[in-house]
Length: 195
Image (tube, rainbow, N blue to C red):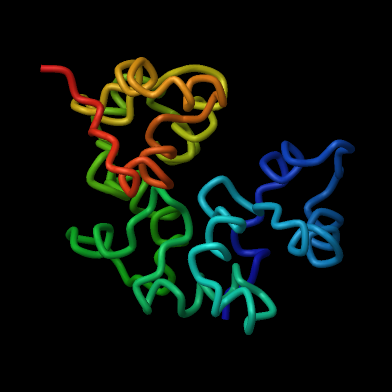
C-alpha cells in the first residue's frame, strides 16, 4: 500500500506555504495535520484540490486521497492531475509492472518520454527545454517552468496563441495547457493551434 510519503516533494510542498518546512518528515507531519485539509498538493503531479473537486465521493469517504489514487484510483480510471490522463497513459506501451500509475510515470514513464496526455509531447518537450541530465520528468519540468514563463507542451499546442485569444487566462497568469484541461475545453474554447 502506497501513501503520501511515496511521492512527497518537499520543495513543491514548501512553494505552497508562507513559512518553510525543513525536512520531509516534518512536511509529511504538516500535510497530515493541516495540509490535506487545506488541499495542499504533496507533489507537482498530484493536484489534491483538483482531485477532490473531480471526485466528490473520494472527498467524502476517503481519509487519504493521495493513497487512494496511488493504490486504486488510477485502476478506476481516475486522474490525479488535469494534465495526466490515466486512460491515455495506460493506452501506451509501458515497460515493467504498473503497481501505481503515478509512481510508474515517475520511475519509468517520464524517463522513457511516455506522454501523460495527448497534448504533451514528452520527447519534443525534453529536446526543446531540458538538459540531458534532468532528474525530473518532462511533465514535472513543464509544471515548474510554466509557473515562471510560457513554454510549449507540444509543437501543435501554441500557448501564446491561447493567451492572445483568452485574455482572462493571461490576466490570471495561468498555464494555458492546465487552463485548457481544467476549464477551457468544457467551455468550448478552441485548441490553440496556429495554421
